[in-house]
Length: 130
Image (cartoon, one colour):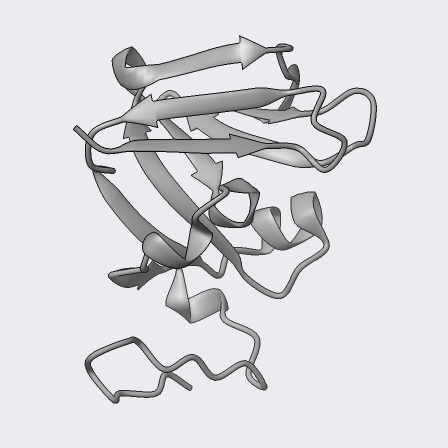
């Protein structure tokens, strides 16, 4: 079984999951842009039952109704997103994983909110968005 490991920038929070992700996608929504400061956020959706935090636990805050975002209290790195709409899942930021290159996005969500100057080519499709 495949295991994926990740951590915040300072290493105080470490997490891992075994198995395949449920999905991997770019999110273009304005809420994620504000939470990360990035033009797009790429998430890895994982079943909570497959996740472990072997070192540290992230701090959390409710960013909107039904949404909890987690982060490292030491370095400030955003860690994950959890929403009432997906109660059995946690959505980690792909850039935190040791082997982020192995976690290839399959799609995009909230494309109507995509910044007009951002263009993404999805691997294997040759198709550019925007």
